Image (cartoon, rainbow, N blue to C red):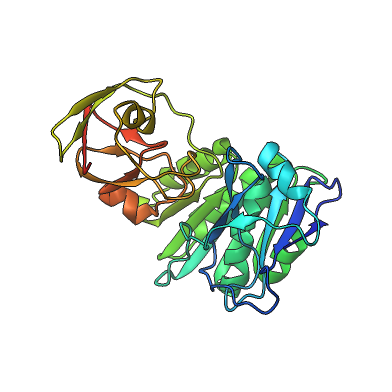
Length: 302
């Protein structure tokens, strides 16, 4: 069941509280930085979107997330009213805090504040937040400011100046977490690398799949020995469907994890929102609805 509340002055971002259908039912706990996948519609073709959880992670009585009115799915969810039912999946973590970290530097732009807020609340004084947002779009700015050391800006210049200073004065053992628009994420990572941050201490989360160029490659099915060409304008799942190879699926957007397929050989160009950084590094599985080969050939366990 759903309850919706505006959290920005312009009403573009709303807090959505999702309660169990039966009052008193327990909800699974989750790791700070986790998200839930929500089916945003009533028909079979409805999209599945991922939303970060912003509430208390331990023994929650409801799941709370913040939804920006962008896209048909998010607008549909914003229009739900108390008593309406929505379908969600168990919380999934791809942006969890690093327990061995000495400190966390958390960077957010716009609606990217949602997983950062969860981390900031849990980490408290061991975290520093840099948050930039448009005027009238500062969702949860006060919550972040009271959770930990925070620098909040509505100008790009002010944000970049503060972040540049923060990147050079963190103690050894600090991990950087960044979430927001792609240009902000890329600029933050570039600035961190330029001053010597190692890749192992850089963590990102996106709300959309990377819109990178797609290349053609050959897909090999290990069980049958079949080889299938995958063109630049086809997904692996499209090719498997055409070849009558059955693969479980649901969202077709890389968020639900249902089409996860073991990879035997070849590098994977991961474009999903489901796998963790460690799982992507291992490249022993992929979401065939969105991910592709990073080279000329990919062998999967089908």
